[in-house]
Amino acid sequence: MARIVKRFILILLVIVLCTGCSGFRGEEPEKSPEELMSEGLSAFDDGDYTEAVESFQKLKDRYPYSKLAVQAELKLADALFKKKEFEEALEVYREFEKLHPKNKSIPYVVYQQGMCNFLRMNSIERDQTSTKKALKEFERLRREFPTDSFSLQAQRKIRECLINLAEYEFYVGHFYFKAGHYLAALRRFEYVITQYPDLGQYGKALIYIAKCKEKLAEQESLH
View 1 (cartoon, helix red, strand yellow):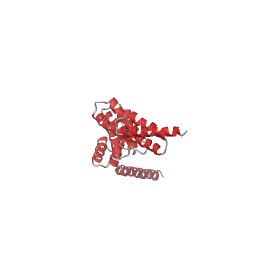
View 2 (spheres, helix red, strand yellow):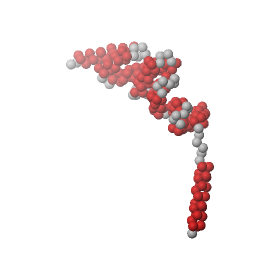
View 3 (cartoon, one colour):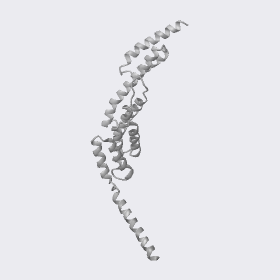
View 4 (cartoon, one colour):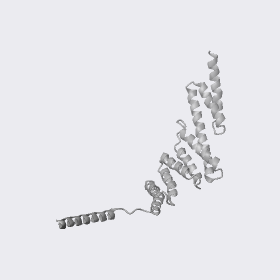
């Protein structure tokens, strides 16, 4: 009986060992941070941003204390940006700035936060929330890093944002004017000339201010 039990135990051990060995042989070896970074950069350069995101995310998650982890965080945001997943990219850029406020890439990171909103700006007849958010980031970059090369790029984007906002305000004023809401239109046109005096809408706004006042005077004379 004892001999049978020993033989049974021996068979079990052989089965366990064989199963374990086959399992180890079937598993893919864990890639090093260097391998993941190399794969991510190669995919990024080839325009395969989905693959790049996967590689950088793995490096970030598996090796948070690696010397390559910080670079992986930034490249992850860049890959998401290239995929036009601007909301997701914006969150990763924000996280990077929060975790590494002294990093030399912060001016670029702030610029990219602005671009995530800039590239989602609506046409002038629609809500301008993204325009305002982009403007806020570009102005922050100009304020905090005035001599940086990305700050100089931001200056051009600031003007584009302001032009969009000026055109939007004029569009709304014109809409109110056509609808006969002359007081509301007047306030919009006055806002254009006070807030956006040199962006191409000033002359037209002045004309409509005069028209609004004429219409309001006509209405007043009827009462």
